[in-house]
Structures are given as structure tokens and as C-alpha cells.
Amino acid sequence: MAKRLKPPYFGKYCVVCPFCNSQETRWIFKDDLEFSCCTCGKKCKILIATVKKKHSLKHDLTRDYDVEIITHSGARELHFQDDNNHKNLVLRPGDTVIFQYSVEPRLVMAVYNSTRGQHLHLHKAVPSAMREKIQQAASRKNFLVCSDVF
Image 1 (tube, rainbow, N blue to C red):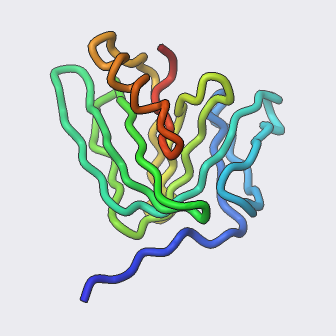
Image 2: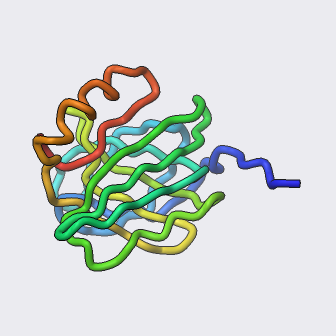
């Protein structure tokens, strides 16, 4: 019988600022939380979730990720692209992950796997071939567009 995945526990987590890379311990007490860095003062949003399933596809210079997650407010799909492509971000079912994203537009800037201590800072914009697909998907209520900029 497969283990039933649950949303992550609320509590203290290490958060890495996507702008200046400073580390802070923060209380995360809801799925979506506004984060203001104590070092640089810049703001972003934090989404804490449990990984349900991850698929990644490597291209010449990029890696595309499709991640299904579970939050306290329900299931969501995340799609993002990494241009560093040095290594595959490890996201296994049951891992607690913190996604940091800009407020407008809702674009992921960094991913931190709290279970494994792995951090991925995203740099690359979404290629034009993917824009239409992502914009259509973003119109769905439970979808979060994930990349640095369009």
C-alpha cells in the first residue's frame, strides 16, 4: 500500500533569499507567505509544499521541471526551467520544498528542498516556444508559473 502524502508541517524553516542569498530562519505558518529579507530588504512570496511527483527533461542548455505538489489548500502543478543545468534538482515524493516567487508576475526565483538541503536558484527566462503553453496553463486556478522572467 502506497504511503499517503500530506501537506508539510508548519514551523521553523531555513529560507535563502533569492536576491542576496542570505540565510534566515523563519516561521512558516501558511502555504503562501510574504517574505522580506532582513539583509537586502527585497520582498517575494514563499510557497511551502510536499512533493507528490517530479519529472525533469534535460535539453542542450536547460532543464525543464514539472512538479506536482500538495499544500494545505490543495494540489498544484508547477513548471519551471533552470539554465544552470549543472545537476538535477532532487525532489522525491514526500520531500518538503520551499518555492520562492515574485508577486507580479508569479514567477519562481528559487527552489529549496528542505528535506535534502538542496537549493536551486533559477536564472533563465522561459523560451518563446513555451510562453503560450505556460500562459494558457497559468489561467488555471491551481497553477503557478515558474521561471525568473518572461
